[in-house]
Amino acid sequence: MPDFSLDRVTAAPSPDLLTPDNAVFLFVDHQPQMFFGTGSGDRSAIINNTTGLAKAARLFDVPSVITTVAAESFSGPALPQLVEVFPDLKPIDRTTMNAWEDQNLVDAVRATGRKKIIISGLWTEVCLVLPVLSALSQGYEVYVVADASGGVTPAAHEHALERMSRAGAVTVTWVQVLLELQRDWARGETYNGVMDIVKEHAGAYGLGVVYAKHFIGANAAG
Image (cartoon, rainbow, N blue to C red; front, side, top):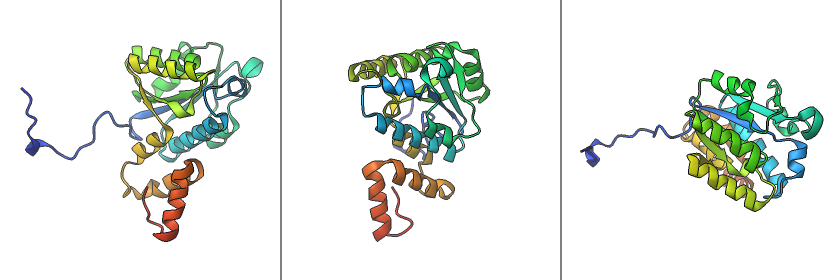
């Protein structure tokens, strides 16, 4: 029997936690035509959340991959706000609805050497659920950023999230990912960057940070 006595408990992080050293970000099909058909939530909020998520990836220097589908013939270019965060990252364009059926995309993810995929995209019920199920089947751990993704209808989005969860994916939010990567307010090298992202993209939480800094000072934590 395993020994669960409290005197053997040590302060150590769970291997399930996301870190800048074990994860890769995958942004799937955040494109104009896909946004036109998104009806599961406010599209401006999805754009904001996707941008905040991308800035988190950049701040913590986590490998990132952007993929588009039929960019020149149907869906249009990648979200400008996303491209602005990663100006040197060329999106991988493909024809398959399932990004995981495109070898260039799979090779790009595999080249990072990371086994935890943080994924967001449009639409949840097609271009997100298909690569998530495929990556899970190949042994990857997948974290689906629900509020940086969207489906055609609220039901389509929710049922797709449920399907992915049942298959083993973990649903998260973009702020959750940001704070999990930071995880210690004493981590000074990224503290100010996290606060900047929060103030710009985290709504009422960001306003709370502004308020706290005004009255408490520069070291007010989240």
